[in-house]
Image (cartoon, rainbow, N blue to C red; front, side, top):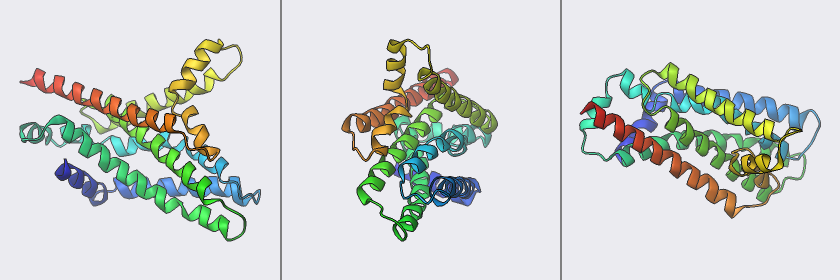
Length: 237
């Protein structure tokens, strides 16, 4: 797993993917920070992270599209299949590499709370809690997108499908809170929503239940990725 992790991490920055992801992430973060904090002269960081949570819907496909589909496009998947490496280690290595790039971008964005602290009162516990939830949510989207793109052979198809799934999840979460939705259905959707699970973190409340939800969600999606890759490997042999 370690070899795959470093291989994928290096490839993000040997190509434009890692740089482009970071640049777009910071550009959107700067715009959202300006709209939520600079213009209204507010030191409340929660609205910033609340709006930033929708950025994952747009950007995690950029990180995921080349992880599995890129191997097939470059015809290197056969080398990986022949390597003495279990599928769980392969999938985990790719997942942790993508999460590392995501974490790097988040750490750079911590400059915005630091800027606020120079002119207003910022509570470190609030920032750290919101950042943790934001990171866990991003990892969950990476795991989800890896699952839906495991056996695709085109990076364009992988990006389009993962974005479509992310958009569907966002719309489902949005519609469940609308009028006329049965309370039972709304409650079920909110319990599995990647957006609703972020809310306690934005209120500076560390939630063990939501942390476990995000971790188990990632584990479940990665397990499905391994299963799908194993079935595809079995069919080829």
